[in-house]
Image 1 (cartoon, rainbow, N blue to C red):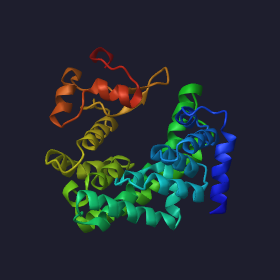
Image 2 (cartoon, one colour):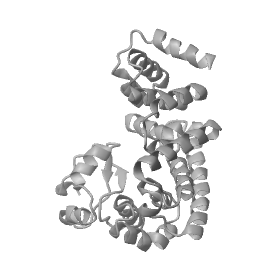
Image 3 (tube, helix red, strand yellow):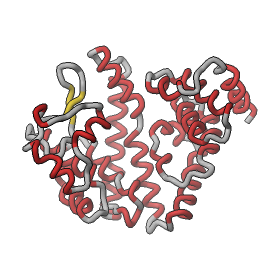
Image 4 (cartoon, rainbow, N blue to C red):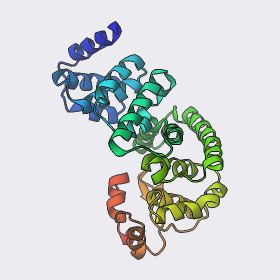
Length: 302
């Protein structure tokens, strides 16, 4: 505990000259130590700001200052009733610490107190852990993408990271196959929306299209019944089509163009794409692509 307060004091003292608005910018640029100090200054100026406490905790987790990260995470989550922090990949390193179970149990308790008891909370916990593992290294992947767009080549850390990510995906696939075999397809009404989407994420990231094809009809059924994510259904459906060198239906799969910028793969009957998206509850493609990859889409660009 003494070391925690020492770091708190250090954060306050070492960031006197840093702007309170810099933390997010610095983190996006990959300058984690500087971002940590910027968030530290913000928190010291307003210790009741739980959003800043959370940003500080996630940044501390990324630089492996585990004990201090837990301290600020507990501050941030005092009045938080969501399960989403349990899937935040910036916090992934914390899941290997025994203290994480306390965070997990506390968030589930608060979530159910506010939203009602889940039909199968233990299954929901297993699925939430799968999501966290599926999203692991997301920050580093985004940094790699930014490096590639700037330099036209991948960074040196991309290659070992890719191998680690592949191993995590294989482990998750085995776990998900066990869960689906034992419990069947998870639904919103059984485990909540966040947890139910775990199966969709794992299947979408599986290396074998045969797995996606195997479950596609079930994924479509839960989407249409309002018991599963139509967003993930669209991603999986489009991925199958793109992998078969066919035009996608919903515009959910991307590639790099000659300018090293992301753009959607070709879309079948692009004039109908928003109609197809609307039918399963998705926003217009231009809005989605601008938000997702900062791409200005129009039919003539297809």
